[in-house]
Length: 268
Image 1: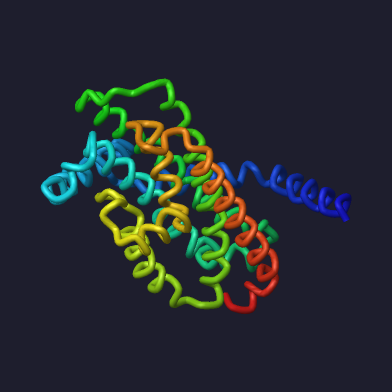
Image 2 (image 1 turned 180 degrees about the horizontal axis):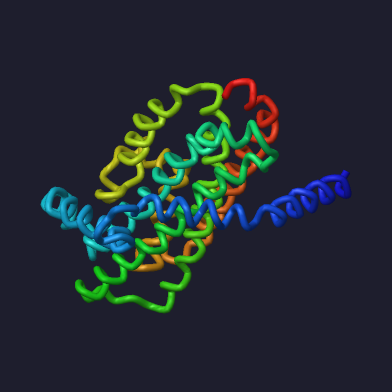
């Protein structure tokens, strides 16, 4: 049993390596298309989160800033990480349907389009972290050596978004309305992720749900703790919860995508 699973994984890896050039081209294409005919180009990856942070700081600082140190950095981290998740899923949703004409003509691993969509948003996230560096410098926020540990929640979130993207991409082939449902769901998810407020203001029952079962809270809180500190700084519990959520979501995405991929052609 273990041998067959290992052989299957090696086989999939070999297939991916055979199509790695296509993967890199798709990622490059997505990034270029995002900024095509834009005067500022890639600079928007830094400017956009900065402008969003300024607006949200003006709106929410009078309500929540008193209980939060380094509020601008706190707000920017939540906004950038959540935007990556919503952007990755939004790009993943049409990744299979949008390439239906190609999939009908030649054999290409279907998951590679979803993988490229999520990865292109991940590259945008890395650009956006430049805005975080700017805000940290301008606000003179003290940063310790723990800052390098932001790699942990960043990788965990990428894996989580990949799994969620695969699940949503295959679901969108059969249920086209899922795009509209996702818009409403992601908005509710944002308000339950403590992006612009401290989680302590929530009622006990809701705070329990958010802190124990919301993956985005795990990633955002870890990132904040490694950047500006907090009660849970370096918490192994948060890292473990984030890893479990990422692994479980990736498993769900891979299983559902693998089981339904042969039926895609019938619904395109």
